[in-house]
Amino acid sequence: MDGSRNRIVIVGHGMAGARLAAELSARLGDAKITVLGAELHRAYNRIMLSSLLAGKVDESGVELAEAAGHGIDVRPGVQATAVDPARRTVTTGRGDLIGYDHLVLATGGRALVPPLAGLDRERLPDRVAVFRTLDDCRRILTAAAGARRALVLGGGLLGLEAARGLAARGLDVHVVHPVGHLMERQLDPAAGAVLARTLAGLGVTTHLDVAASAVDARPDGLTLTLSDGRELDADLLVLSCGVRPDVELARAAGLTVDRGVVVDDRLRSSDPHISAIGDCAQHAGVVTGLVAPAWEQARVLAQVLAGQDPRARYRPQPAVTRLKAAGIDLAAMGDAAAGPAPDVEELSFSDPVRGTYARLRIVGERLTGAIMLGDNPAVGTVIQLFDRGTPVPIDRRTLLLGRSRDTASAAPVESPALMPDAATVCQCNTVRKGALVRCWRAGARSMDDVVAATRATTGCGSCRDAVEGILGWLSSIDTPDPVEAEVAA
Image (cartoon, rainbow, N blue to C red; front, side, top):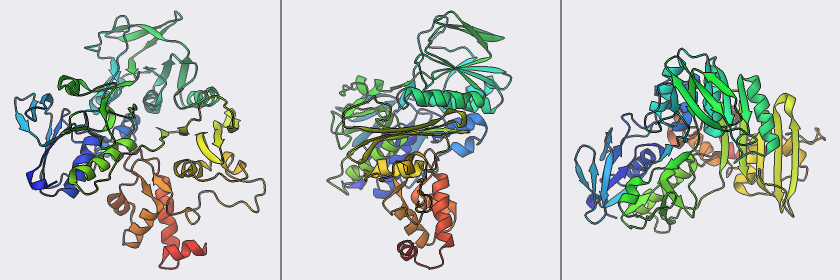
């Protein structure tokens, strides 16, 4: 593609749209890139909203550090209202008509509002909020300022992050979940039970296997009625009942839409001049809703649009789900929550009192799924084995417990010196250890320098300790060549 003749319009300035704009700017320096963002804010890291809710960061701490770049026209607070594929134009809420050579939909998703009696789904009461955007977070914090008790409807990943964030502010928090255990998409019942016990110790009470049926919101408080007849009083209700891809713009434009905008391996929709990435895109029947696939889609699409790699294709990688909440360390991956199956080796360890649980599923000496909850020293090694598909150790206890019974011969499972260069350290940005080593050798010595060069830690942030550990190891090496030191180790 000749960037000088290309007009690229990106609808959506969230994590996917902002990353794509930066990727395109780096590859097409003279292209005209217009980004329309329905929200008034600059792009921010949605994963960090739970930290904002908990008071760990302020709003500046959730802003994305993506460079604007030459030729990028970012228009916050400007919503796309219509797309005309025949004329290749986008109409905005301000009445602007913007022409494009290629359009990218990065419209994300919308929080679901359940059909509860007494609840107007189009206009929520002041004491009721969803948890999806920065404005939602502001709304929750305003309501929480004078609150003593909060209810969270939904015990999935986002619901638990919201619950932990509010509990960290001193509120008495209750989670209502219609399934028999928490995070049922990622956890098995045993892990869910350990997680519920851990949450109880952190000030979060869970009500499982019961649905909400009605809400009575008043100026002085609210009451949530449960399907078993119980009534829970609170000052604030947070709805975390799932997310639906925002596909109305695509559907009105006549694109093929299922749950999301249907795209192929090159992220093209049914119109070759329109692509979709992120939470609104459906690839191979899957809508991911996670940041790592969205950023990988942005990278691949930037290669395609820039004409740099004609063979560039999006190939989804197995996802690792991390619960980012103070006092809880959880990683779930693969088919760990599935039931018993032939030819599957299963191992588990549970210590509910200490909040520790581990479960591994192994097929043909490869890890196909794992749940690691609590203080598990081997969690980094388990993620690497799952990510790379390498054989598991003969002594499985090193993965369950982080050490072998023969402690004299047990090697440290997460030593940076023993970690191969191909090991993925930052899952969100696919940053491998080798990239961190090369960055250090090129002169980066501070955490900020490494983050700026590699983007490591800028997703969910759960890899920060690992990155700091690698940098600490590099700075302690006597020889100037860390590769030689690694071999010697």
